[in-house]
Length: 323
Image (tube, rainbow, N blue to C red; front, side, top):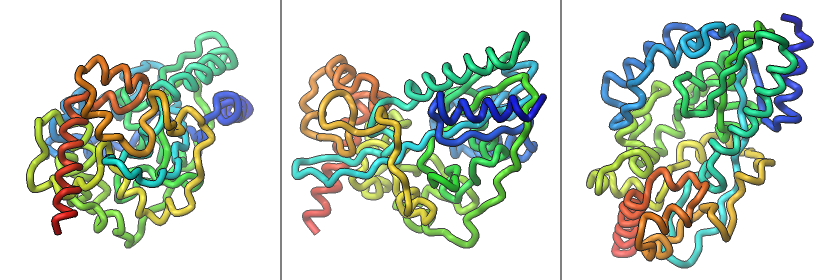
């Protein structure tokens, strides 16, 4: 397939579809990626995330999702936004990725625009299949193969332009496009993120034990209470965690996102940078909670999960004051 077609797709992705990064790789991965995921799951490090056990082969083999797969287009959207000052009233910290609207909805719109263009420009017989985080594909591995970034010791993909503050998406196609060179960067001897993690979730080899990760503990797990030995480490985090990204040297010159849907807002259904604990605790029903955070990532934890997180944040604040 001609390079001009590849160039047109990349240009459209960055301009009309408004992605911040785009790269292309062949629709194949080294077997080491598949083995790494299987080993991670078999060792129990995925915790209760049973969905990680499903379709293990499909994640590394796009042809099992699209039989005619030839290329994978990897895409990224910068989501960084500075944190607002902590309010005077009781509040819990929100991870930056959840400040605004649910990124799935934001990126899915962009993928639809790009997919339509590729189907038109590719001609008869062109096929595409896209994913944003929820589909069975190793997005970080393909993004690294496409030259977008490298695997950091904090398990995130670290890009040249935006550090690790990026959402990833993948588009599989049967078009044989010009592939980019893989990214060959690395963290070197740096271990700042490993030492900064208050729950010792980072294992030092580019992987983590999800069962100890604050993001997992505040979002994924359905337990009624947090493990006592990890409660103090959760600190002020009410939803997610950014510690391993905040301390990363590659993130020190972060650029504020140009995508206004990802901005926090003081009113409406966007979470903002701090969760008002009193507002949450005064919500009496799940329906009230769902309405209050319509279109926000915070709905993933459900009201019961956020109330559990709020209890931990309050306990940690009380213990801090009593010292």
